Image 1 (cartoon, rainbow, N blue to C red):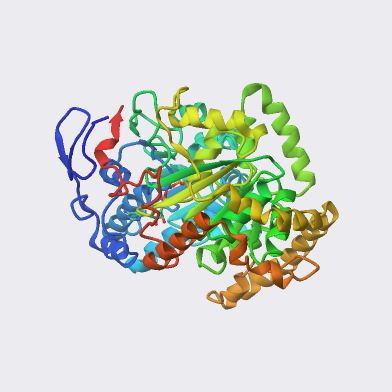
Image 2: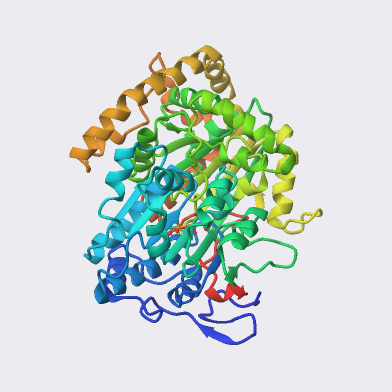
Amino acid sequence: MSNVDENDLHEENQEGEEVQELSFEELGLDPRLIRALTKKNIEKPTPIQQTGIPLILEGKDVVARAKTGSGKTFAYLLPLLQKLLSDNNTSPSKALPPTAMILVPSRELCQQVYSEVLSLIELCRVQLKVVQLTGEPSFSEMATALSGPPHIFVSTPACVQRCLSSGVLQAKSVHDSLSILILDEADLLFTYGYEKNLKDLKTHIPKKCQCLLMSATSSDDVESLKKLYLHNPYILTLPEVGDGKDEIVPKNVQQFWIQCSYRDKLLYILAILKLDLVQKKVLIFTNTIDTSFRLKLYLEQFGIKSAVLNAELPVNSRLHILEGFNAGLFDYLIATDDSDSKEKDQTDENKQIVKKKFKKNKKRKVDLEFGVVRGIDFKNVHTVINFDMPTTAAGYVHRIGRTGRAYNTGQSVSIVSPEEMEIFEEIRLFLGENEDKDLTYIAPFPLLEKNAVEFLRYRAEDVARSVTKIAVKEARAQDLRNEILNSEKLKAHFQENPRDLDLLKHDKLLSKKPPAPHLRDVPEYLVDPTTLQASKFVKLTRAAFGRNNNNGSSRGFKGGRVNKKGWRSSQDFFFTR
Ligand SMILES: Nc1ncnc2c1ncn2[C@@H]1O[C@H](COP(=O)(O)OP(=O)(O)OP(=O)(O)O)[C@@H](O)[C@H]1O
């Protein structure tokens, strides 16, 4: 990696040549696309876009590995649309669609990518058809989606295979018309069980088809996919710094941790949220659905409303929860993501266990195409809290990657119990810390004085006791019932009123007893003076930067690693063949 000043616009590439940052115009993008980007307030390409777009426009096969939130989606969508725009102009009848296929591992990602393409197409005002299909659609759903036929088909590998085997999608048509295939979140595709689908699909992909593989982390699965689909590809990757992998977590994310007993986690999260020590919006991760409901019920008693998101909920609800959170309709989302454990279990010896687990999940009607952590572009999340630590270091990177996206800043707070110290140490090593800790990426959370926590202990423990296992069970069942009822209503309603946001408020109370008024506000005498100052400072910062803190904030905090420019330059990438 070149060791250069981050503020210097001209940096060196791997060979030491000086390379200038290019604008979208200089990358050769169609003016309609540039206008669409301007309308989305996107002004300059991120490094992966600078490097990737020209190669993709040239028709090269590319493997792009770049950190979370670095703009990989536009890195492939822009050149893809550019190609379709020019095809469309010059010879509209030449291609037998679908011309492009984008395969992703989860429904949420499918929806997200589809929305991005659609919005670009609408802003460009061109006649290109994009469709999405996931899950197990009926014959008529498949036939409707693929009639037309679409130029771009966004789907999961299993769903494409279903379309092929039912004959709705003709293998010959794929063979004759597919000119670009994109495998997004490539390292997850095998993990989600699509290995066989992808191997089967390969037989229908024409040799001339350009293939792109996008991923935030590398893995053996990415290597296998690369060998399976790509021909002599360009590999765009992040440089390793010494031994370290400091570029894995974006530099504009400050990482903190708090050590406490498992039992005290509720107390600490209450202190952080109730004393306003972190900026909103806040995405909280738990490892089990029960924990997420326990946390929700507990926070409710203190007047903190939150929504939960997990694989058990109907797909419509999940998509609307994401939409509501992104639209800023609620500030706290508690997510339980299973993909992390799917990843952990994907060693050879564990594959059997995973299969069993999948079967069990199927019985519990947990959606295996669900994924909150990987690739989902949560808008304006400023703080990620690990209430439970993830079970893998890669899981940590992807959770933290939900903040600090694009040019935004963000922070993470991991609440670590003694039982989680082993994985925490593993994560630190993964990020590049050494045994002596003379290089620290995750700093102790600086704003919470011990006294501040102790002052809250009595109330916190009292409320924690009231959130019994039975209350959790009932709340979980109630939420599921509500969401199932809502799900169908939502579907019908949004078909007619796509902009009605009120229904998206998923942070409604689940507690049977309404929260006690005296627990809503923490009286000043119960707040440690130093923490009170910190809290005022956080509030002032929030006010100065606007509610969602898009432009970043916490610069005054110690231990932060805010990068002024937000990005490293494209020359931080190198490519090999
Ligand atoms: N050039 C740009 N300038 C500013 N914002 C951008 C730019 N390109 C993309 N973005 C925004 O950055 C956010 C993250 O982009 P994207 O979802 O593509 O990241 P990613 O690299 O795919 O992340 P992940 O690995 O987590 O999937 C999105 O909200 C997107 O709109």
